[in-house]
Amino acid sequence: MLLVDDDKYLQEVYQALFLFGGVKVVSQALDGIQAVEKYQELDEKPDVVLMDQRMPRLDGIGATQRLKQIDPDVKVIFLSADDTSEQRALDVGASMFLSKPVQIEFLFDSIKELASR
Image (cartoon, rainbow, N blue to C red; front, side, top):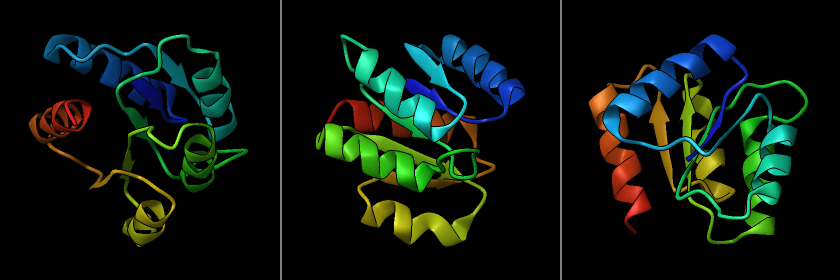
C-alpha cells in the first residue's frame, strides 16, 4: 500500500494499525505531488493507494487524476472527512470512497477486497 496523508501523526497510527492487521505499507507521502513521485519511483507498484483529500500542494482529487494517467489500473481508496468530495473522487477514478472516521476493521476489509480484485 501507498499511504498518502499530510498528517504525520495519522500516518504513524495507520502504519502501526496496518502492521498489526497484516497490511504492508511500501511507501508514504505527505501530499499529492509526493504521492505521484513515489508511485512512479516504486519498482513494484502497491496493490492499493490510500488517499486523503485535503493536502497541501496537490489534493487527493488531483493526485488521483495524475495516478490514473500514469497507471489506469491503479486502485485508489479515497479516505476523507469531506463527504462533498465523494462524487468527484469516484469521477476521477477512485475505486472506493470511505468517510473519516472509519472503523479500522472496515478499512482492513476494504483494502483486502480491493487488493484481491
